[in-house]
Structure formats: structure tokens, C-alpha cells
Length: 360
Image 1 (cartoon, rainbow, N blue to C red):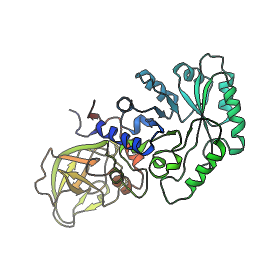
Image 2: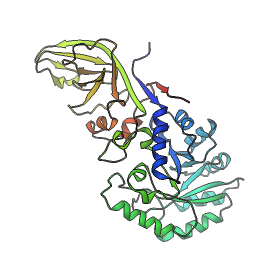
Image 3: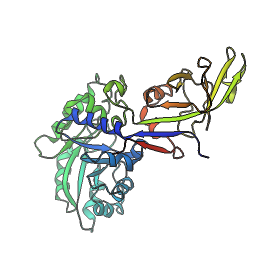
Image 4: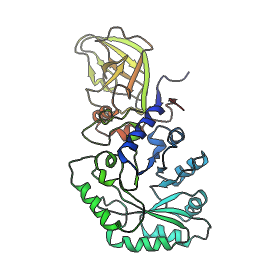
């Protein structure tokens, strides 16, 4: 018999969030980011639901090929780029656009004997100092790439380091640097990630690259997705599988980390870190049972957690439990685990079935 935990993926909410992006960016084209199996939501279902977009962004050549094999014909950009000569024929065969951030990659494209062409996105380092070409070499790199026989079209991109803070002036500096490098070249440009879409209209240019906001999570530090008009796409659910009374002074769970301050009624929920719920979570963390908050009692284990339902006497075996999603923001779960919503969503493990609702 299968375990009770499951991730319910609301494709209607996904499409709603996509339309919020569309409203925000006007005429800019949208490259929907579906890397890491669409942030844990399932790349096949997500890509199918977002075919109204203008293309997709992934992290690896393998992820891009999978989308092609699933019948995706829209442009696909590999943000993680490529590092070996064996990947170049794959890029050309499947018409996948790599991101080029160093001269060695450009040399691989120049040296290939394979026929065919692909678009190439040149990554410009405007201050994040992770990957990308420095401002002084951008002109030379563009010229060399345009002369490459395997390149159909050159596009330009950069990435914002601090866009999640609308008060941080560094994003404005990065955008200015990008303009200085790229104005007047007549090439399509892209800078905006989800935070850029929401907080930095000057970063929209020709293409935007929304990721986490498509899944209903805020890309900003100070607001939740709901406050931005987004809807949660994933709701992680389980159910109560046991009820237990513990007396004042008795300890619960591994290490006896939780002690009953009075006689308490606990519900055991079939979900743990083996499913992707964070083990290290704050004492104030809670779940929803029939829409009511119930605090977690003790350490989260691999398959189970205990929650205090002393204030909810009607809780019964089989009652639905929401770990995050509809009614309980994933941002709250992430804050309580000292991490970000991105990691929480991507951490849902393969043993958790994805149940899709709202399909066209």
C-alpha cells in the first residue's frame, strides 16, 4: 500500500502565475525556467502547460534533450551550458541554444565538424562574478561568435545578484553595465529573473526568465507569493496515521527534543525528511489539519512527524494534513528551516507521487 504523502500540482495556478508574468513584462518574450525537473513539479507536465510561452530554460543539455523528446518544439536555452566536444553535436542535432560564458566553449563550437546551427546566448558578467565575459571583451566575443559557422543567432544575457531586495542599488548598477555593453548592437537581450520581473522593470529587455514565481513563490525577501498575486502550484499533503496521548513531562521523538508541558494529544503524520520536509525546522513550525494550524512536536524523522493537536479535539485518523501550499505558504516553511522556498520545492523526493490537477 502506498504512503499517504503526495504533491498536488495545480496546473491552473501555474498558468495563472504565467499570466501574471505576461502582465508585468508587456511585449518581452518569456523563457519559462523548468530546470531541476521544473523546481520539483515535473518538467513534462509543466512544459506542456506553459506552451503559450516563448521558450524554456534548463540547467543541462540532458534536461534540454528530454524536453525535445517530449515533443517540445519551442526554443530551449541551457543555462548550465556545456563543457565537452561531445555535447556540441547534441546541441546542433536538437537545436538547443547553449549559454556561452568562456572562450573554451566558443572554441568547441568553432571546431565542430557537424552540420547544423543553433542560437547562442553570450553571458556577460555585470558584477555577480560567477560566470560570464568581462565588459572589456564583450565586443570581441560577439564578433567571434557571429562568425562561427555553427551559430545561427547571437543573443546576450546577464544575471542579477541582489534583485530580491528592491532597495539594493546594485541591481541598478548591473543593468547600467549591461546597457553599456549591449546598447546599439541590435541583438536580443535578457537580464530579468523572477525578482527582476517583479521589482526591476528596467531589466525586462527582450526576454525575461521567470523561474520560482511561476510556481507561486515570491522571489522577494519581503513578500510572499500570495501578496504578489501568485498562487501556490504545489501543495504537499499527507494524513494523520496515528493519535497518541502523552502525559506532562514525557518526551517525544528522537532525542526527546520535545517535552509535554501538560497532558497532550499528538497526531502522527506520514511525512518526513525522506519525502523532502526539512528536518531542521524551528520550534514554531506548524502544519494544517482541516485548515487549522497544529505545531510540530519534536524532531522530524525520515518518514513521520508528530504534531500537537491538543487544541483540536476532533482530529481523527485519516484527516488531511497540508505541509505547505494552499493555506500555508512554502515561504513560511522555508523561513522556519533557515532556507529558501526554492530549496524546499526542489527537495521533494522521487518517492512522493505528483498528482496533477487543472489540466487543459
